[in-house]
Length: 325
Image (tube, rainbow, N blue to C red):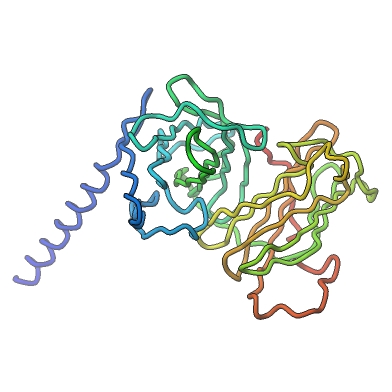
């Protein structure tokens, strides 16, 4: 009898804690009502909660996209769960340190905000650019036809803030969930319409790694790539497991007199740890943006030798035109 009473009390206690956690975040309708996390005082550690409500100590070395709040800014999704569909409206606001919706942004890579949507198994990648309403609400249709748990990344630079931020939140799409295994590493990716992208180079944890992606169509190198987001390609890197969002920097830019319009596009990536990563390359040719996908295994720094990487060595032979534009 005593055991039963103790168990009942424990369950009720959990329910109370869970209810309090849920009540701390309100859904947004026409205007967001979520209160932004307070910005830590100088010298303190930021302990803002991630999208699952778990608080974690944060320092400057933590990769982007793992937290819903950082530096006083919060990603507030209008809905945490949406019905599946090919063009589901995704709405959200970025709340500033005072709790008000941010309405002014610095343009970065030709856009005020980049939204990345991907399923937790790293399938269904989409890179879209929402429209900003005067009240600070961003909105964009996203293909959420396949059920599952999705991660939403907002990459932006609020005016007046020193540098850019990448905040992440979870979005559930109910229905039968059939998670896909991570594709095996490979040095080439086949994309629709006869395009093929090869990846040269290797990722090494803790240092800038040079990666060159070469685009061909029907076996012929493409030398007239079109600028996309102020470069000849845009590369997103996500770490398998926690979906940490890594910034990848292109080498050169269109019109600088040195950077060719293909077939090779060179990037520098700095990954924090060894393990599996998923790379998504967006490139534009003949007026259409397409996406090539790769699985790459990052090496430990100590494992690197003087032996050069072999061109075309397995680094996922997977590709998609599922770009959100």
